[in-house]
Image 1 (tube, rainbow, N blue to C red):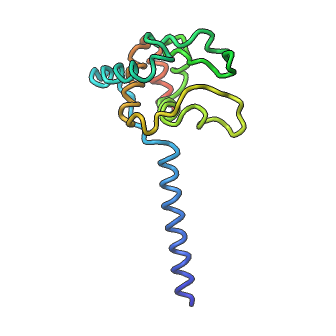
Image 2: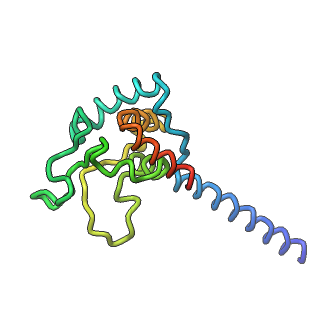
Image 3: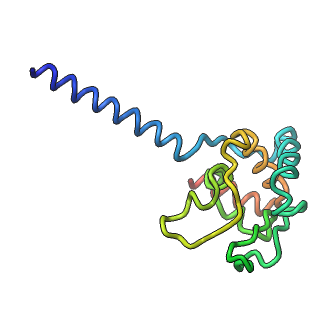
Length: 155
């Protein structure tokens, strides 16, 4: 009887460990490095951005007008991804998760923030998301890229 209890407890601990590990991986996503100096990644990211992002965020990364205020529908407009926006204020891991899971997935429960930004999980592969983010970062001035790099080191 004692062996059955030990076996049951051991199985439960292993199951919990596996579930926690899987949940941790799913909730954070698999994040690689942004590669704004990698020409292949930047070209691929530019193409994917044009196909999936530019219709809202603009062909020149300029975002929608009045992006800091809710639109008539109550939703926040698409922000710029150039140096005038706040994209570079977020570390790469957060940017990756915003694109993959959508902004609302990262908000506190009960948040009233609404946006039209979809989740791209199942639409874009992780490497494609990283390529888009690499393209965006490649367009920032050197001082903005340097500040973003410094933020990455702190994370």
